[in-house]
Length: 275
Image (cartoon, rainbow, N blue to C red; front, side, top):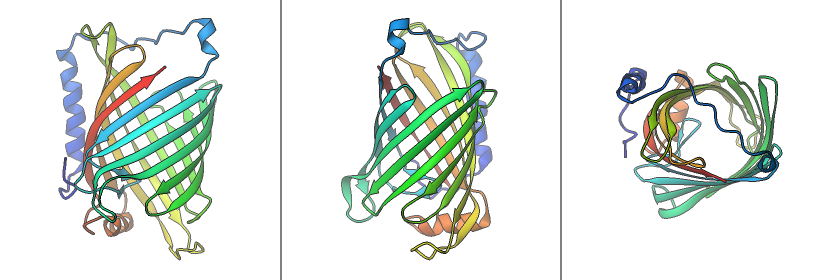
């Protein structure tokens, strides 16, 4: 596990991404991105089930350190049909640093959302219930994105139960073809990169009597998606989370387990299966 005590700078992560781009010519790549095969007409109008499990060195949520010196797993199950989706997501901490300590399912989230698109604009309306060992709360969110270069997506999250907080997020991402895999089948590997910036506002009228408003967390990430079949893939991934302002730096440090950490390098392996 990469210790969160090491303060790293943005150039380190950029170097990782540049290194990944440098390695692209070492594979037998092909020009362009291969378009996914369209399913047969009779299989389009049916529910789909996605099972996703991530194995990570650290749990970071909106810049906050939620695990410490332990291995974490994030199982997720999503059922989708006609734009509607329901999801269960879990956080299994192998050795939780707080109380109670040890192996435990520290968090379970329940989500419902609807997604659709109009020309190049895609949108999502959703609801999430966070159920953690520390507290329960609920949020609603809306996301607007453009299906174009860098896939810009702007989302707004509002806490409707406890804090009355607003979380604004602008994310970019892109996928670069790397090489053709001839071991598991005729599938294209890809280098996926992205990042986001956010603004967080928590008003003082909440029951916690907290007044916080600042440019909050930034995150850059890179992963190599390796398809194993038409419905299954694995993705090794690395991420760097950092504060966007001095105020956010103090806020994130105060919430960390050591009381002095606000920048985190972490990574893991993601298994994804859809049928």
